[in-house]
Length: 348
Image (cartoon, rainbow, N blue to C red; front, side, top):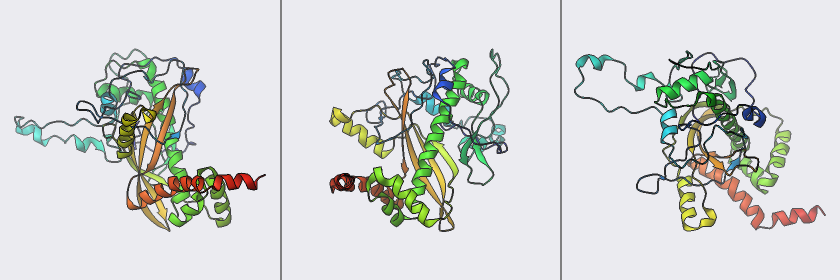
C-alpha cells in the first residue's frame, strides 16, 4: 500500500473503479519473490521479529487471479514491503568530504504529503524487456488541498520505484496486477472512512442516535436521519498519509497476544499498516482526524481467489476513542439488552 503520489495535475476524469476479480484474473501473473503486497509483518512480540494481530475487520474482499500477484503462503517478513513503501534511512558518514554536505538532504527529496519520492520516472528501466503502461488512474479520494483527487502510480512508476528500492528480482509481468490490487484496497479503505465520517462527522450525540440500535440497524438509522436533516453531507478529504508496515498498532498487538493465549483467536498478523490524515468539516471548521488502517489477508476462497480484510478506525484520541466506544459498544449493548429479540418479536 502507500503508493499515492501528489505530483502532477489532478485528473478531471471520473474516479477509478476498483478492478473486478475478472480483471485481475486476466493477468495470470505470478508473484515476484519481493512482491510487497502480502509478505507477513514481522512478529513484534518475539525477540527477532514483531507480531501483528487479527482485526475486528471490515471485509473488503478483492478477488485477483488464479495466479495472484500476492504471495499468501510466504512466511518471510514485510521488510521488503516496508522498504518499498517507506524511505530508507541513511546513516551519516562523518568522513565524507565537505562538498557532500552541500547536496540536498535525503528527506528534502520526499513529498511531505506521503513520504514518497516527489517524482518517480515514467521512463523504462535499463534493460527492461517488456513495456509497461504509464497512465495513472485517478482515485475516488479527494485531496485536502481541494485540487482534485489523488492519483495512483502507473505500473511503470511502481516498477521503477521497486527497482529504486533494490528489488531487482521483481517479476515485471506481475506489476500491473500488483497496481490493480493496491488500488482496490485503497479504494476500500477510503469507503470505510467515508462511512465512518457519515456517522460521526457531525458529533457524538448524532453518532449515538445512529448506533444505539446496533450495527445491523445503523444503515437504516443513518438514512432516516439524513432524510430528516435534508442537508448535503460534507465530503471528507485526504490531507496526507503514511505507510508504517513495521509499526504494529496497539489493537493489532493485543489481538495477537490473545491469539497466543487462546488458539481460538489466533490469526495471521496484518501485512501492512497505514495512517491516513482526513479533513473533517466540524460545523464549518476543518478538523484533522487520523485514521489507522490494518490490512489483513484471509484464507482464500475455494476457487483460489484471495480475500482481504481492512480494519479501519480513528486513532485513539479522546474523540476517536469515544467514537469507537459508541460504534462497537452500542452494538454490544443492543444485543445484550435484548434489543435484537424485541425487534424480531415486533416483526411477527
